[in-house]
Length: 180
Image (cartoon, rainbow, N blue to C red; front, side, top):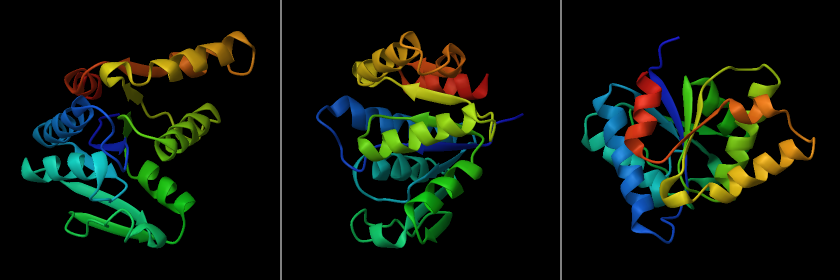
């Protein structure tokens, strides 16, 4: 299956390091240059806004999905190629995942983890077989990787679940994995 559309999960905040913003910007530009549509949470704040503005500035197609109750909080970015407003968070996640061929996780908080684990769980249940790439900027996701390994070691997850994840350290490595 050719990848043409990439769902990016990331923070609605900028985070503590400049490298997180740089990774979001580089990924947005890289997606656009590779002809890959960005699917994301439609916010214009934090890393979400950074990745979308970078993709737009590089001429990329953008598909944003935001629930009604977050339009003001996340500053809904209505100038996207496609802007979808949903009723609930669950519907947002479903629309984002169904409109993408792959997933990339940038640094983020609880919402990003919620999105990631739902995508992993749906994959585990056979609801999709999309690549899931974790962009481990400055080892941000190292504790998560250790936790996942611990869950496997303790018998609460299958090793195949974690082996199916692609861990990379740079936006370019994520783009290489998407276009391989």
